[in-house]
Image (cartoon, rainbow, N blue to C red):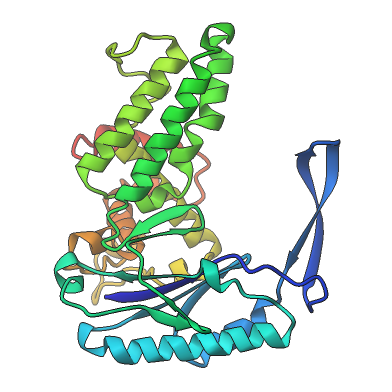
Length: 338
């Protein structure tokens, strides 16, 4: 079971000790083209040391801070005290540097199996003088995470956003050429599938069916087909939604193996080294971590090595320029991954 705390965006005092990053960007504003963007963010190196002193895992991204700790149900009270002590230290660190943490947007969630969470008597965590009650679903960096990590709320949000775009595009569909229809659908519709797609790999089939129906509707819109019409296999769109998610996992794995970044994913990967000389010694394989639950089968340290080891030897070439095409062709040939 995991006790997670999500501290939402923190408003920064203008007079605070902060870092200012000015970089060129392609940002369109109401007054025209703006060639520069200014980003203000607090210095996170100091706050990382504060959190690490409490032996609590953390993720810091932009102005969002996520604290989480893995604990047995019997040790929930002790974990709550550690989390509250860490929060007090974090908030004191912010106040000392004239930063204003937004306690009203802080969320707490317990992650685990339903049978494990139901008998627990957990009322929340004290943040400053307020008691933050546990949530059944939290919105974190564009993702909607539920307690069982089934990703059902996130899938429902994707489905709602996609069909909202369909209603808008349906009004101008006849005014667009096939090329521009595909361009608009890729940017406004399919971008929802690509965002954090690796986290959707391995989810239940009923959720995959919802996303597959959205994808089929997008293809009908591109081709100008009627609603409910049959879609034949197309060389331009050979992969199903599930296969597309697996491809994203493989691409992320290749990037991690080549660059070593992000470090938290690289640390979860271990090259396979047999105890004696075997033909698999030079096969560039990875160690597959054993799991006992279906939800842990979707973890990157378990799913990514399993997909990597199943690839053909020519597909496991990290320097191949057509790595994505080879992986897509391999996924298409595997009827069990659909």
